[in-house]
Image 1 (cartoon, helix red, strand yellow):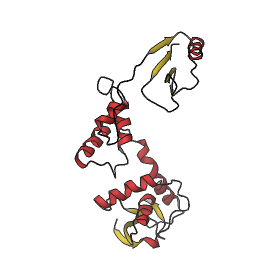
Image 2 (cartoon, rainbow, N blue to C red; image 1 turned 120 degrees about the vertical axis):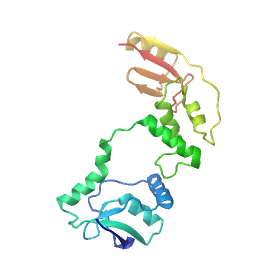
Image 3 (cartoon, helix red, strand yellow; image 1 turned 30 degrees about the vertical axis):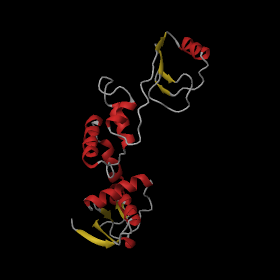
Length: 215
């Protein structure tokens, strides 16, 4: 399978491409190309229709690239083989299982070394959320501590929040308690666990008072 160089203007997006590439993703692709080059080439049909690499193509347009390396397959863009390439490039990776904790460790190593996560598909806010959700409270007590751990520049600790956990025998008792304190807004709901702020705060927050209804 040979790699050839082709004018960007000669490429055509596949008419049945079903994935879109938002600006933040394209910026990560641009950062990756700038740092590492084209380690993943665009795949095209014999008529220059893109089968894989639409995001790379769009990123190159934003970069004003004139030429790009491609892999050409000797198939028609509307053939079954071409549609398999189109879907497999997008979907096979979704079958993989991710060790989120190990991923957070890798991203933290990158951040410590480069002071930037550009090109990884993550930013510091997303990394702090990943750290918080993959570690027990003995390691990371709350989302504030996770943000401190990744060294978010604009983060200022606000101190520890006071938490109260109340368990109920049934939904009616839980609702009666909420009514008594005038709680009308649930900040987070996971199964039978409702999380609220008192006094109410409308934004979603991971640090809060939790009301747990037992079945």
